Image 1 (cartoon, rainbow, N blue to C red):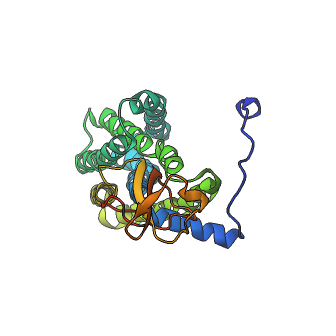
Image 2: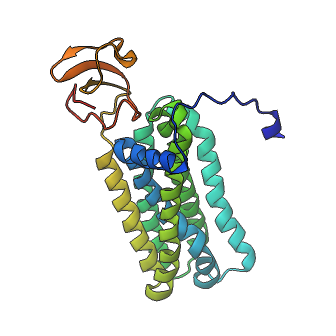
Length: 274
């Protein structure tokens, strides 16, 4: 009913030509060339590491370690979804007062903290407080994962021209799911071979490494508008309508995305050629 009742805008004119391979190659180049999109892939790995613990190891954690009945498994998974949903509902208000980078990176670093808490619980014998503590950890993982993933669409839209959005979302889809392809079997193999506490701890290390990589890749100063120089466009080109002569080409500033006129990220130096 919601889908039928939703009014969707008409498709924007597609400026990019070429077949599937051309569009796929451009989407990959777009992600590789845009720092904040590379960071997005890193935090996807952090989410996959934490999510794999929840989805792969919950049954053995609840039934084997805590010796609870089969009916306890759905609540252990349900609180993860509940934490995710509540956070998603609160995010629009939060993002009005904070930027995407801050919310996403802080939440990404919260994931390894939650996994370390989960590893400590797994290393401790069943106690009276073990069940509520497990539910709290699962809810925290769901909340942090949602705070990392939900703003991702905003980041892609900010980093991509309208005509290239399908290529950008498709390019993100494959490597983000590749992260799950890595962490799913890793969670199972580690739990079976090294024990549940060590498995959770090692996946926490993966999440921490991914979050740290994202913090390094995504610059703290990440303005929407960037000054840059075009060395290869001729005078009078329509894209240079507001540009001024500069050393090596034509300089101007505007909301910057990788497209047919901008092939690489300008970098930290103002006015660097694109």
